[in-house]
Length: 435
Image (cartoon, rainbow, N blue to C red):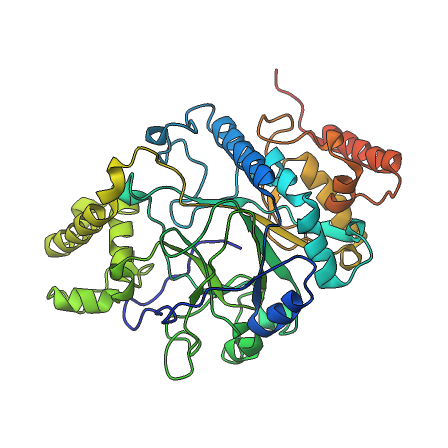
């Protein structure tokens, strides 16, 4: 899942990755050991959920979405056009949650891949894929930092997507994504705290009185899971193009950029070494590492740079310069390509959804909605006007997709009628066209 990281203290440690790094095993979709691995470690990699030709088609559809969502301003073959003005993804974490991405041909293509559906069917022990309900999640892309160092995302926003106070500490959901590129320390990707799902109760023991009612919960930087004698070292989940990466929603995780030595230097330490100890500028609440200071200089301070105390500004600038020099060494490479491209997928047994949620999901599909990863809740993040060029024609989707998005059916004609009824209701309730 994704959202802005909560403000954090700039002091303390930065979680360091396992050493030596563990390369996660990759399981075939029908290997029963995969589910045991998921239960034990809180995540698992399913090899080749998409074949090579399917990966190629999914990548093509992603770029169709990028070009259409930017009105043609961003072009797949020209990284010069991938700047923030034309790019629908977040500079902070690479997430795409707007412009109808949740109902794009790209996402629906990935959701309907047989081995993706088979993986979720097996997790929940269902008879057939028609018994699943699919999330309306978006996607995530990391742009090449060798091309532009300011495209580096923020790391360190470790979170759990299941609030123990409202959703409990048992298994509630298994989230996932299909990676369309190989993922390793040179690209960045998903970092998990392996086994943290089994310590989920600990996380919320201290938050029993919390008024926080959302399932997205950022861990405080000093949480015992992140620092101290009983902490769990993060693991980068390395994967191949076409792999399906799955994780228990209780498992602590976040996405991280390609590793750089500045990631391992706590910001407080770096400031102290620069003779700027004790600096608690409000703009640094998001920062935990020295690398974050460069991100902040590029992305937050553009319009506020004059307000920054000169010595501090010099420090930020220096860090950004050094990081840029490191990252853009590779700029001479002829082919600039994405470092990371993933499509989020999540499916739960449809019996968990109330009838009114199924109705809201049918409506959401017609409204081009992007939602959270919870399939049995209609938590919409964004919608687009009907007929937007970025979204799929819902009526043209196959009957299986109609079931997965919330139609009752089960006959195809019945599901089309349900969608037509929802569309008529939407047209009726729409404000009159002022023209």
